[in-house]
Length: 597
Image (cartoon, rainbow, N blue to C red; front, side, top):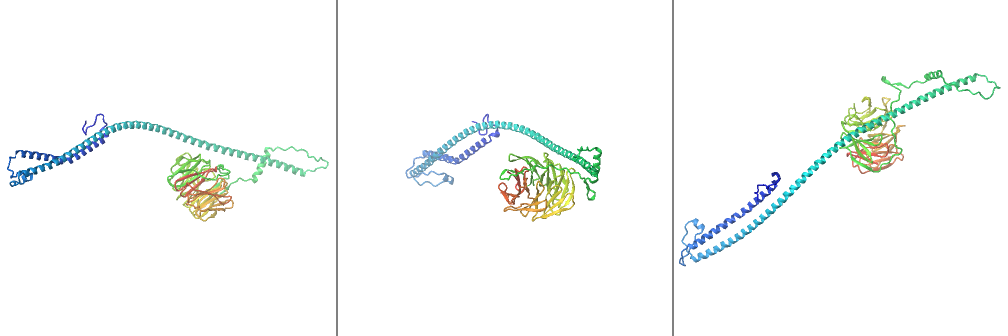
């Protein structure tokens, strides 16, 4: 059997057998401790045996003495103390005492022998236990070797799986990149197709106008010819004897000379539409390029339940909007990120993340064509992204404080921003430059745009109307609280405002007065940027409350239609209703985005 420090042949390396050596050392220490307990007992037992032998030897050598003489054997203490006085006891008494002492010694020796036997039996049991432990250690060594082999095999399997996962990830990344390129190409083709359709429509409209103009000219020539014939007929003398039936007169053909005469006559009264602004800025009478109208559903579906709940951002979510095709949703938050989501099968699926916003995102809007996204941020600028690209395309900088609203105008390549620096700015997106700055007189919280109309909501409890062709404010409507949001209907006839007096107001833009005021028990405007919107068919008004509820009013009845609770536990910051009228998305201060249907 090998020693405690030696390793059995074929054993694993020393590093894997340290625990065995530790157990052996513990057993050896225990043996030494138990052995030390019996060393004193064994030494005492040996001394007793030596004394017993010595007494027996002295007894044999003693000479016979008279009975009256006492024999005293000196004890160890007396020997050490020096010579003792002569014994005064008899040998019988000494023998009797010696026998008693010998009996006691034998009794003690017996007890000690019994204890020695017991200790020997205990030691034997400990040896047996040690052998059992060594057997178990051998079995555990074998089990450890088996487990080590199994571990190595599993590690090889894991390495193989990781290699396959890496290959799959690379293939997935390649397919994802290819899909992104294909989607970008598809969007570009769709944009080109829309532009071609618009150009075709414009060409057809121009051709129709030209044809109508030519028809009008021919009609004028005919009318001039008839007028000339009538004048001749008035000067002409008619005999009664002549037949009552007028002769058939062939319709004269308008020749080129007559057309030129008519055109010269038209130039006398027709003046091209143009006018000159003050400060030397001339404006052409040609119509500006406009976005095509967005198709809107006939009837909006009233949301009834939450379809999907997503933790959209790492912090508060401030803005949400739908694209024109109602399948893409954008959300922006205080984490300086903009995330795009696809609405697929009643769920929000993450599509893309736009980075680069210099501050918290406060407002989002898709271009009517759906190709661009405009965001207002707290870094004193608005940024323009092209859908499908992760980096911003343009940065509209010029404000001196937080930009709270950014909206596209109906005419192409134009936008409007509102800021807390008390200004509203118009932008030319082709040049990424400010074309006009309007002094709003108060913090601007939101803006909306009409044909030539810009409407801004302010912190001083007023809604101001601005005309792009006039340098001053044309209308002011006071309300009873700070204006937090504005929403204009698709037909440009009504405006919805939300304010901190916990009320929504519908303004008729045809007469510029408040038509309806909506309030409800439990509804409370939670922040200075809480957003409210119209439904696409202008049947309902939608807003989120500070208690996490979604409130919907009916514009026809003027009453609260429904209120929805559940997913939101904190204040709702913004809501959006898709143009198809089938879904609603709400975002809150607790990082959530909820899809309703």
